Length: 235
Image 1 (cartoon, rainbow, N blue to C red):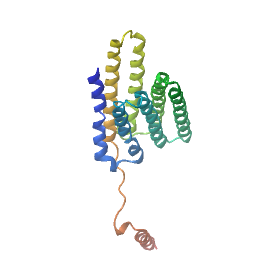
Image 2 (spheres, rainbow, N blue to C red):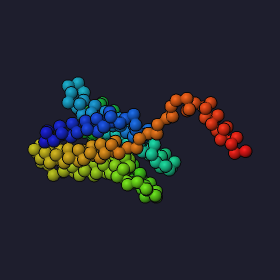
Image 3 (cartoon, helix red, strand yellow):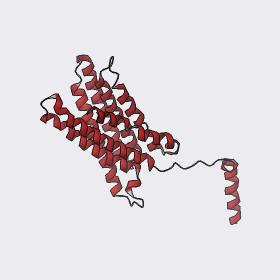
């Protein structure tokens, strides 16, 4: 069980390497999404050093950070102003509720409810955002395969992750001893690795940002001169 969890945590290094190699080429939404690899790595690493900080805080921090980050990404890529507003309101509400429960946990030293709520909120809210994006694609004439769309890959990966997370933690109802927890964590590790595979593909297949013109020909003066020359040639 511990080996599978370790493999899951180390698997974030794969998309991280892709980010290091391609980040300068990413469009704004994908560049923002790339911060997820650092969020995941930081929370995974921080969870191993819990002498002064409860591990629950890193779990809650990961879920809150993922909600906020992915919410911002979907806000950038959705075309409907109404849907963008809904994503913004939902993200802020979800983060506020989880922070409030975390504050109660700090006072009472009882984090179980806050951890569970943050985990379920992350799975539910981000699955909803993914479905909204997929619905947007249904009304669009796609000339490129959806498997080349990084946000489509992210959305499919998130839907699988959300479904897997809810299923895995539902196994708690079947657990009677601490040894019964192994299937749950193995399942979570597998679904987490699958999500990281989709994330890696999203970064690999992200479109390259358009290059800005460089040199003297790109200056406003030269552009004006070129436009004037084209206009004079018409008459």
